[in-house]
Length: 244
Image (cartoon, rainbow, N blue to C red; front, side):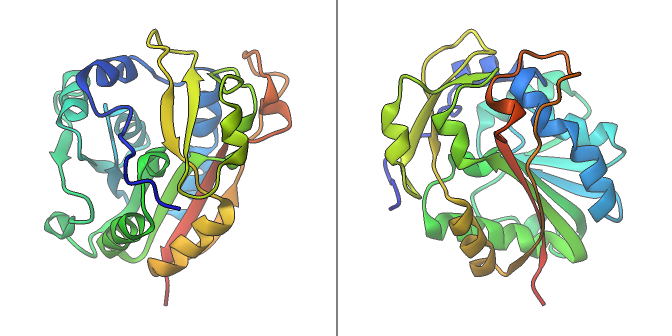
């Protein structure tokens, strides 16, 4: 089901400021650890869109990889924090699904890190993905990173879900909750649950082909106190191309 009452937990100034201080600690390290190799294996060219850039963490990451990148987001508070951390950066406020003014067919990469965890509705998601697809060059790629369904029913170095047993009953479109342990603000964060099977259907509906899926696990030689990360992937990384 689609939950039309969902409110993005990061859509206010207090949360934006809290999130802006976060870089790549603990479980978040696994989200970014393998991305340079994944991107270099699948992406040709250096023009990129960072969709749902938030406070610019993921945009700065792409810039360090050598991309000419434009960060886009629907939150003015997030973008204000992004510009404070990256004064020379290109950050733009957008409306969901309306990106053609950025240049359809102009980009080698559209990156979406954690953004679809916070987007409700089949139609809304499909429209957004279709708009992002249109930005790609013929051989361009969307690289999307989001939470696995298992993130909401296990304990992690960066998250706790034990206070939310209702997460176990979640279906696509349900609101799920966790507590972030790496920020001072310990109010529950709300996400939108989505199964892997329904992600695949979403990609097809948006005219995209799934080319690869990655699920990074923690290693014993890494300097973090892993919990579930050794055996259960908290993140899934999809590589998508335009359907022919």
